[in-house]
Length: 213
Image (cartoon, rainbow, N blue to C red):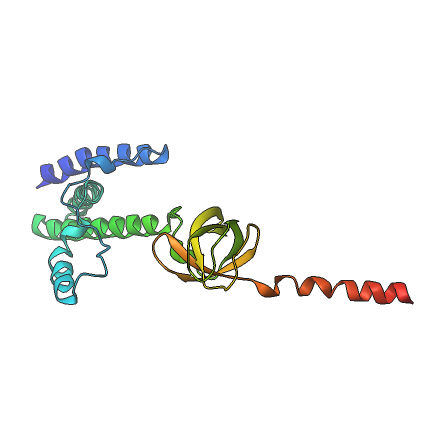
């Protein structure tokens, strides 16, 4: 049992250190992860009776990857050697080392999942345009009779979307509009911002009053 612990600690530990150093310089080992890894994110359109079976049967296998296995073997070997050095018998050392290895495996899996979720997704999603305001880029025909184009800021990026409007008049280039509905994955419904010009008249009133005095 001593040699099993020693081999796991030396071989897996060496890979663990190399993997850690490569991660520091921005080189990942995702390409050598096991191809059988099952993602945690299950599509929403799968029925509950199916997803229940999937989660139940993949709870363990979902955490198995090259990183987690190397981590588990490393901690298994190191903790096993530590237990033997503490004069514990081999069965007890094996149980403790196995528990420590599994715990390390799950900790690395949860940490990696957390890091993946924290990564910013730069993909601009049309759903996020709901309620945003912008300007007409290509004139939009009235009463949903045709498609124009608008330009607006979504997710801190300037994007362009095809747009329709239910307004009775044509929306010309430069007209301020607001997205009121997502018609399709590529088309939005907009309405003119009729109150856009109203506030601009208010600030001039105090100035005119001051000049009159």
